[in-house]
Amino acid sequence: MWLRYEHMFASPTPLPARPELNQDLVARVRPLAAASSRRLPLLSALHPLLGDGIQRGSSTVVVAPRGGGGSTLGLTLLTAASSAGHWCGVVGLHDPGVMAMADLGVDLRRVVFVAAEGGRSIEVAGELTDGVDLVLLALRSPAPYAAARQLLARVRDRRAALVVVTTVERHWPIGGDVEIRVSDSTWTGPEHGHGCLTGRRATVLVGGRRMGGAPRRHTLWLPTAEGEIALMEGA
Figure: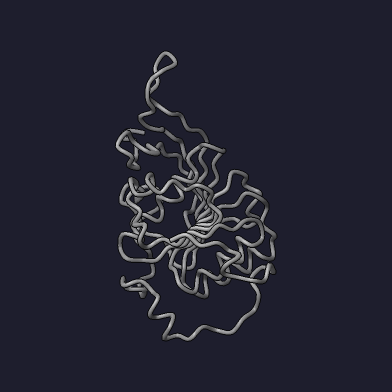
């Protein structure tokens, strides 16, 4: 589902105060999957990195260099949740590649895409928490600290989960409950200057407030030649 921000909201002011929605209406647009669970499901390939689910009310920050697989990794966090019937929102991601998303296992029938940029993207992400369980926010410019704090407060209040994807760490001014940094990535396939890309191998560091201890290093296929996300054995 594709939506334009200009068709949804009139005010450019980040996260404006507004009355509560009718709870009967909220219940009707919530996903069929039970919303009482404390965690949202996560792709099994990511369990060794992040555990068996995404904590409601939490934030996950994905930082990767341009072309390094950050968007792919962020979208992968939506795969199991959307497949389980949870509504997800994607804000500010240009040309997400719906065919690639389908190959990753994302249920596109359960994802709302909104084209919004800058401060408006933060406002839209906050609005979406009234009707979705998981919001992916792609940042291309710095987020104001006050707006970021207000968005996190709304995520906690609505018992949703937030995934922030950015190429510059300082664009998101608040540390995440979970932080994933792609330190390097390499495509495989072409030999002697020609051939087809068959997969991308990426090194990631996983840390954050809820992970405890020093960041852990993992190596992922992002994706494999079959378009899947997988942890490299023995890495």
